[in-house]
Each structure stands twice: as C-alpha cells, then as structure tokens.
Length: 366
Length: 215
Image (cartoon, rainbow over the protein chains, first blue to last red):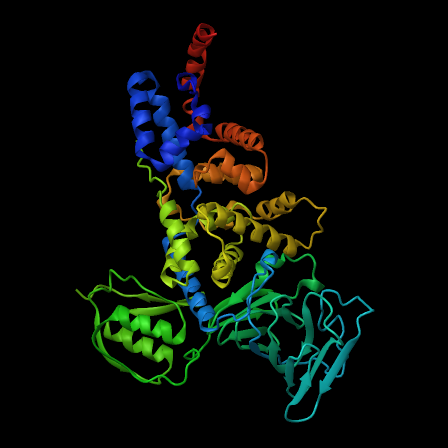
C-alpha cells in the first residue's frame, strides 16, 4: 500500500491508481478514495488540485471536433460498404505478412487521362517527364510504346494488365515487373485495366502525381492541364500523391490523398497542393439505372440516406434539428445537385460542399 | 471542482463488437470505429500534425481490419490492439515518407514532423477549452515526442504503465521515468501548476518529521 499521505501533487499525477480513479471513476476506486479522504481531510486540497489537473490534461489532448468525427465515420462507413460490394475471394495463408490490402484476382479497371499541353511528345520518357523512384537503375529494361495516330492502341503489360492508349500518348514500363511495386510512366491519356495483386501495388507515375491502386474495383480519371491535374474516382479506392522524386525537399506526407467513389482531387501545380472534393456531377455507383425514388411525407433523413447509398457520398446534417422535416417528392434521373437543390428548397435549407462531403444547413421544420 | 468526464468503461462491450464484426456484422464494425475513432485520432497527433494524413491512416487501419476480419484473432484488449496497430502504421508511413533508412532513429524522424509545424497550424477546437487547458496543450506539445506519447496514453486513455510499456515497446521503468520527467517539465511550464507551489513546499516541509517518524 502506498503512503498517499506523503504524496505531493506530482506523485498523485504519476500514480496509476489515482489516475484510474479520476479518469474512470469506478465504484471500487470511488469507495477507496472517498474513504481515504475522510481519514485525511488535510489532503483534500491537493487531491482536488491533482484531480483538476488530470482532468485538464485529459481534455487538452482532444484535437477532434464533433463535426470532423462524424464526417470521418461516414467516410469510413462508405468505404466499408464499397469494400463489402467487392469482397475478396482469396484466402491468404500468409497471415504474418499483414498486407494492407488483401484482395482477390478481381480485374481492376483504371482510367487515367492525362493531357499534357506544350509538352513535346516526341521526347523520350525520361526522368524529366516521368519518374519512377528508381529511374536511375540502368539494369532495368524498360519498354516504351508511343501512339500518335487516331483511335486507341492496346498495350499488354508483363503482369497481364492492359492499357488502352489514346492519341499522342506515350507509356513506358519494365520488360518484367521484378520489383515489389509495378510502376509505369505515362505521358498523355490512357485507360488501364489492372490485374489486382495485393503484394504488388500498381503505380502510374506522371510528372506531377503518382496514382496508386489500393484495392477493390475502381475507375480513375485524371486531367493534366497547364495549371491543374485532376483525378476522379468512380468506385473503389485509390491514392494520389505528389511525385516527389524530383523534389526531395518537399514534405511528401502533405501531398497524399485517398479518394473514394465520386470524389476527385485537383492538383495545383504552382502551389503544389492537392484538394479533395466531390466531382461536378456525381453518378450513382455500381448498379444499373435505379428506379425513381418516390417519397411521400417521408422524414428528410430517409431521403438523405437513400441519396447517400445511391451516390456513395457523405451527407452531413443535424438529424435532431431536421427530425420534423418531411418531404413528398419523386427523385428520378436528374443530377445529384439538382436533387439536393430541390430537397433544400422544400425544407428551406441550403447545402454546401466541404472536403468532398455535402453539408446541409437547415432549420427545424417544427 | 471542474466537471470531469470519465473515460467510458466499455472494454467488455468492445470485445463483443470485435467478435461480432469478425462475423461480418457491419453495424458492429461501424460502432467499434465510432467508439475508438477519437482516441486513435488524438493519439496520432502525437506523431504528426498533418490531420489529413492521420485521417487516411485511421481509415486504412479500419478498412484493413474489415478486409482481414475473418482472419483476426479474438482479443480481450481491443483498445490496446488498435493503438498498437495504428502506431505501427503511422511509423511505417512516416518512415516511408521521409525515405529514411533503418539506421535513422524513428523517434527522431517523427520529431522533425512535430517540430516543423507550430501548434497553431493544428486544428484547435478551442471554444470548448479553458485557458488552463490551452496552456496545458501547448506545454505538452513542447515535450519530446516520446514523453508526449506517454502523457497521452496515461492521461487521455488512462493506460497503466505496463500497458504503455507494451504499446511503446520499452521497459516499464522507462515509462515511469518518462512520466516523471514530463510531469516535472509541465510543472515548470505551467502557471496553473505553479499556483500550488507554496502548497507543495509547505507539504514538503511538513512531511519531513513524518518521514523521520516512519523510519
């Protein structure tokens, strides 16, 4: 038994049992400390001070607002749903490997569209236009395919993945994917169909950004203009990062974003910054054309839920505040933002887009 | 006395949610994330101030768990499991991002991230914080990274020294040393701590004869 009577405030702070009492307030601890304080009334002040400090130290380390918490939980829930839609098939026997993404042999589709303006297309793909991180390795045999004609040209990659090149496009790739990652370098516009291999991520390097396949089935679409580069996700999940190979001084961790369905990233070349947002006209995810949604005096929360499900977007709203709001509407093939505008008009609310999520600002409908 | 919000004692419930989500229960998975997201986020701020990176790391962690759900083992220590997993992921990610080789001390590399950014760049939900708490936050952020981590695990999550030692893979005695050093530093930095210095001196003096008696 500790001699608490001799404790100063630092001792109390360091004491495990004391902290457990303050932070968890379990009945057994309550009984002990209340009893102890009765027997040591002269220590009440210091105990009270120590309790307050522990409480404050606890609170001071909270950096997450309620709104952010809700947003992230919804984002996670949406990602989990799309992961469930495309379940894995392979039973991995290598449990100890702890790969981040386990998946089946599902065919992964990726469309990367890069339009490079003012970029001489006859220049061979080299470190200046597109880097793999190990582009200095001279031993690697790289194959380059250029397509300058009309239509598209199909290229088969060593792992069985295929790439459909648009005009004025050049791609280079290793003759064999021997490294841990499958890297290709692209200059122009291409549609990728990538064989999924969880042990070997597939990466598309362009001059400014790196697009990485993380898991399940998805589509990426990116525009590379003179100022911006854009990557858009339809289903599944990809990571987009700045290509830091040419600038070691930059802090790379600031320049990586994970994209979920109907989200896009715009990379501003001058500021070297990426911003995540919803695409201009989010499309319903996955399933064939859904039937019109008919609501009759439905709680508005239910309407939002069905939109969230249909478009796999996150809609953030104050459920308590809007609890009394009802809606009678038929939602058909009009774009998502038109639907939102209609709903908001009906319940006298407005919506806002923040970081790829839809935020509803409304008031009670009593 | 200031109201204190106790840490919810929901570990047994968590173990139940864990088992249910391993059997494909999606709601149990969402609920588990809901109950531990804040802890994990706040813990990660001890490694990097980049909140977007933190969010992505935690998303990746939970999605990885979802993918591997059928192969996850039963565990009664879900919270410590999650903390350890996030810690590994964060250190790996920060290490990859800095392109360091193994010889470089990881803790040192994390300090680089922490020190380069001022406290002000962090999202501060300050309206809910008292002046005292803000000063405490700043004082904590000035501690060496590993002391920050110990202080977080001890005072935010209420882990025992033994659990902290397990999470950080250090000796229990080292944890105790970190705690004493950090508390001393906080005491020097914090006016609210200093207010009671007279009391401490008084108690220190008064405890002298007590010591002698007990010998």
